[in-house]
Length: 218
Image 1 (tube, one colour):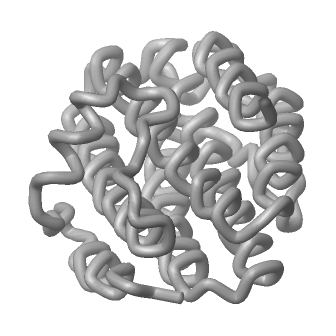
Image 2: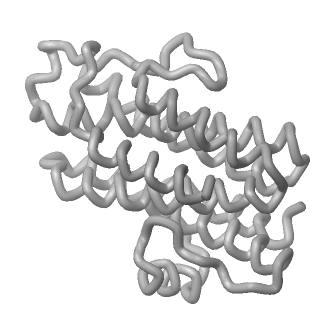
């Protein structure tokens, strides 16, 4: 039941992906209002992933969470570079682990942790859920992007999310002996990702190296 509640919460967050942040400045006129909103949202969505993994690593001491948290930091940094380039205020500036400007992402973080605290398997499933949701959100943002630099950054992040999903799925299968079950993406889409090899993701060369460490990472 809790897994279903978390999935519903994530679906609700998807519906708010276009919500503008108050921190959008007039100096970002080169971007559409939607591009601005997407960048601001993605910056904090990647923080949800990083902060969740850091917290879950502290709870369960599974190395995969530490490894992927590091990769999520690189995703946050990539989006921050775009915020700086287009003179957008950083919604994550000064916020500690677990603190978010977007109230819906704040609620989502608490919902994810409520499930992740139940067991190590639940925590791993939260990881898969986060990565599936990132893939959905970033795919939508790519479709709305009108700037090549933004699109390329999103594609690198999405490549990373596919690698992370592969890592979580592999550990879940090793622990349970069962194939990974999709949570918000269609099962055939997830299966296609999981049956393809780890990817090298753009200029973030360490993404693939980190992904390699996911295998059997406990």
